[in-house]
Each structure stands twice: as C-alpha cells, then as structure tokens.
Amino acid sequence: MNKTFFSDHQKNINALKRLLPAEDIFFHAFSLISGTPCTLVYADGMVNKGLLGELVLRPLENLKFENDGGMDALKEVLRRELLFPELKETTELNGAAKEVLDGNALLLFGDLTVGFIVGTKMLPVRAVTEPPTDAAVKGPREGFIEDVKTNMVLLRKRLKTGNLRMETSRVGKQSDTAVCLCYLEGIVDPNLKTEIERRLQTVELDCVPDSSYIATVLTERKHSIFRSVGTTERPDVFAAKLAEGRVGVLVDGSPIALTVPFALVEDFQAGEDYYISPFMATVYRVLRLIAVVVALILPAFYLSSQLFKIQLLPLGLTLTIVEGTSRLPLSPSMEIFVVLFVFEVLREASVRMPKYVGSALSIVGALVLGEAAVSAGFLSTPTIIVVAVSGICLYTAPNFVETGSLLRWIFLLVGGSLGPFGIVLSVAFVLYYLITADSFNVPPLSPFSPIISSDLKDSIAKYTMYALNKRPRLFNSKNKTRLKRK
Image (cartoon, rainbow, N blue to C red; front, side):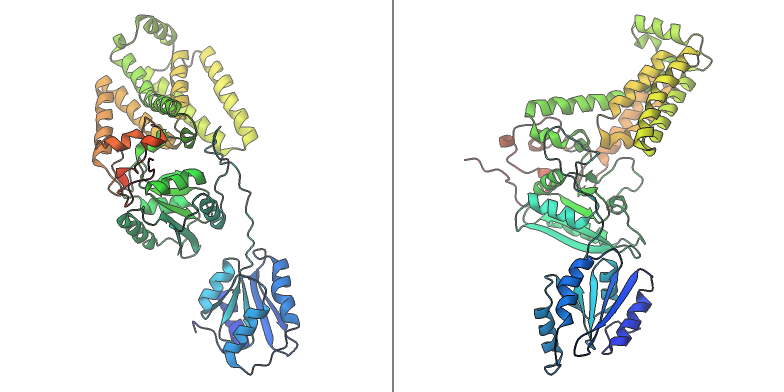
C-alpha cells in the first residue's frame, strides 16, 4: 500500500477508509463553489464540531480559487483562509490516520498530495481536583488527571522556565499512548536522561493504559518487592522533584506521574512536609517511620513471644494474654494468621466496593464481626488489638502499604517458625538486600547507606530551606546550587 498521499482525491479517501474502517470514523464530503472536492475525516465524539464548522467549513464554503499557481499557491491560500490556529501538513497516510485516531480532524483538499491536520481535539476529561490518594491540609489542591496535555500545562504553570523540556513519544503498538519525558535542562544528569530514553524506546507492549506499565519497564529488578520508581499525583511534588535533578514521566490516560531515581526514604515523606515548619515535618516523618516499624514487627513479635519467649512480655500483659487465650480452639499461630487474613480481605473488599458500601463493610467487619468472634470464644481480644494496631500504623505511609503488607507476612511466618531469632535474621536479610540493591545508581537506603551528609538534611530530618541550598548529591546534578545566599 502506498504510504504517501495520492494525487487523486478519491484514491486518498479509499486508502484512508482501508486504514480506518471503524464505523465511528466519519468522512464528511463537500465541495467549494469552484467545484473542488473536499473531505473532512474525524472520529465521532473526539472533535469539537462547533470549532470545526466555524473555523474550517464556513471559510471554505465561499472560497473561490483557481489553481493557476500550483500546489504551493494553493497551500498558501488555505493557510490564509482557514482560521484555526493549530494547522499542520502531513504527506503520510499512516501519520494522518494516527492523527485522526488521536482526536484531530483531517482535511483533504482536491487532488493535493498533502493532508491538513486541524487541531480540533476535544476529549472527555474530568476536572482538575485534589488527588484522592494524597490529600493535604496545607499546600496546593490541584492534582494530575488522565489527560497528558492538561498535566503538561499544570507542570508548565509551576516551572515557568525555558529549561523545562517535555519530550513526547508514542508507546504501544495498538494503544499508541503518548508518553511525555520531563526534565530540566542544565540540572538533570544527561546520562540518567539518556538511559530512561533508551528504556522507553524498548517498550514493545500492545497497550499502555496506565503509567504502571511504564514503571515496570523502567524498573531494573523486575521481581523486587521494593519499588524503584517514584509515583505522585501532585504537580507541585512532581515539579519539586524535577528541580532536584530527577527525570519525570507523564503517561496519557493516567493521573499517576513517575519520577526516577527513587529512594526508600521518600515513602516516609509527604508533600505537606514542605509547607509546615521543619520541626513538625521532622516529627511527622519520625512518627511515620516508627509506625511502619511497629506495623511490620508487632504481629511477628507477639506470635514469637507466645510460642518461644513468653518472658519477653511484661508479667501483667502475659497474664492477660494467657487468660484470653486459654480456652481458644485455635493455636496462637493459627489465630493471628486468621485475624490478619480477615483484615487483608476486609481491606481489599472495602477498596474495591463502592464507597457507600465499602465504608459500611469496614464498620461491619471491624466492629460486628470482631466483637462476635471474641464473644463466641473464637478469637482473643489481644490478637485483634495487635493486628488492628499493625494495620493502622502501616497506613501512615500509604505508598508503602503493598510492600509493607508482604513484609509483615514474611516476618510473621519466620517469627512463628524460628522465634525472635528468626525476626532478627529476617530484618538483617532485608537490610542487606536494600544495601546491595540499586536503581539508576541510587541505593534504596540512600542517603543513609552510603552516608551522604549533605543529603541527610532532607531525609527523615527536615532542615530549613536555607540549609537546603544545594541539590541532592545523590542525583549527580550538573547545577549543584538551588539557593544562593546573599
């Protein structure tokens, strides 16, 4: 099949109909006063028909033109008569078909061997609202949405500099999804940008409906339970990470933006930390870290102390546990496994079900089911309290919930099998893995391992903005200074 336009109007239409046989692709044919045939090709529901009629069809209705000056003269007349600002030419049939599928309109004029792409795209998108997964008391309320163009505008609004680069490419053999690579020229490490570009070029997927597909491609250790690509729904956080020297990725159809490199300490940070006092930000970060450690270790410690080292618990607590578990039909191991399993099921069900049903399900599961199980002598109160505290503590770091849930099960299994020694061994193994692993030459435990003293000022502790006058050394930024002191 010919890849370029023919010099025959009908042949061009037939070729496009073979490329676009779907019923929602409209071919609107009309003629000028001079008799020149024209055709508008567009996808129904994806174009602004009002603009298409006012700025394209209406100017062409009364156009009188005699093709005496050749193709160049005809192109010049069309550029002058068409009032739409977004107008470009294409000579490839496949390229024109992709533009139509992307939501633009295609104008075929007479026997010209070029098509005119008219930017009348009007896709249905939701309004810019506060991100549901990252709400904050202080700070901006805007969040990314599923339209990549809108997300690019939200980013440009916060980084009004010519150094901001947004390079768009197409990924997905069938979906042809727009992927935007974002970085600040002169700040980002060129080697990092080149490596991410290379990995994006290796994507051979048929469909890319969400940014998580791209995150999988960018991840070096495919089977690791620890993520190596950061995610955010907040434009202010995304812009701040680019200013540190990171590279960001926006994917059309997804409100989740990606940032690389990523360090584990970011899971204990929140965008709101930068809008409150450094002292309170440090307190909240330490609180999140302690809460996550409690969430991971508490169930395993409770089980191992019952099975192996009951003397690890205070005497009063020991007597309470013995009194509550003496008549239970289940062993301590089976009991805590059942409670934790029910908790995970309730969490999953409350997330997947509609909001008004999910909240009711959580109340029924937490109050009615728990109270009934204790009253019936099937479960003990201490076990329910331990699992509930562990679950609440884990949600202080929302982005760490998936990894934390899996680690909690691992610690529980090892602690129930080997006792306190098994817990210590598991923690040591996880720390060893985090120390030896890296992604884009950034260790997950940085800036603690290896220790980078200057980067510690914005890790668990949060210093004042004047103390953060240098960009993180971890990202090897070309421009080290981000705040000049007078």
